[in-house]
Length: 129
Image 1 (cartoon, helix red, strand yellow):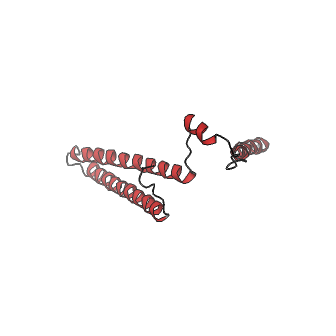
Image 2 (cartoon, rainbow, N blue to C red):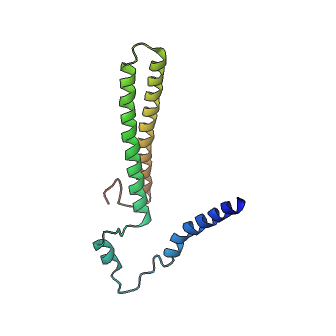
Image 3 (cartoon, rainbow, N blue to C red):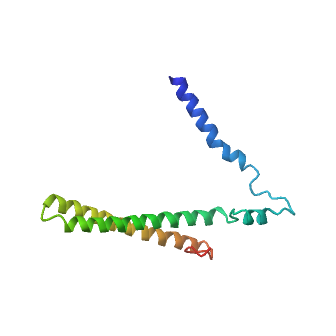
């Protein structure tokens, strides 16, 4: 049984190393090549990794914010329908507290990302890529 586990780890390591083999020539575009035109017409991005990372982080923070606001609304409904039950009221208050914390985390994350991008000297801040 132990050998099956080792085989599984070997397959996982091989699968994780394949992208590095595929990107072995990354950044070495021959002169006269039409790499950028092919990428842009083929629907691929020509942005660098930093811009892509910022876009993903902004997207994740947006999803977190939307989820937190929905959670806050659900907690408000739970609070209104508690009907004086102490357990339900406390549960709704706790859910509201966590929803407020999630909104604050999303806003702080957005501000930190845009501040770091601005400090690094990029003019591509807050989604205007």
